[in-house]
Image (cartoon, rainbow, N blue to C red; front, side):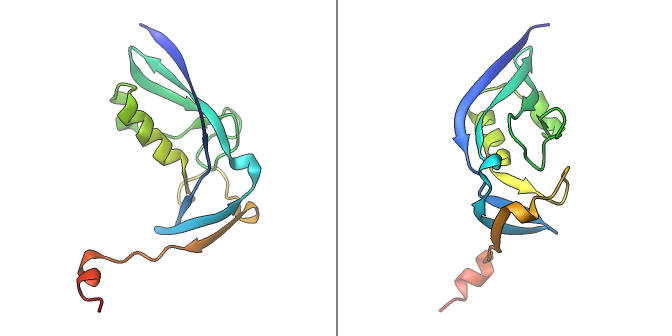
Length: 122
């Protein structure tokens, strides 16, 4: 079994949040939620654990372990899976989280226009 730790040193500012199955845009966020890199542990090249150095509603506050879907754990760590992880990091899923940072973010509901509505807009 080959275990390897990878450090991804990019800065990510969460941009969206999900609450009650609706999408909100994050307008302002406490600096403590800005992600200054993260670590990915792989086992035999497959993603095992993603760990954050800062608080995130979808990461265990005690360990920093970020919640990732089980099907992502079956994938190799590569450019595409890194993009998937980064997409998840940039969103707070407050429908399934460890804590809700309501007092530390400003947000507004994002209006979603369906394809059928776009065709009928004059």
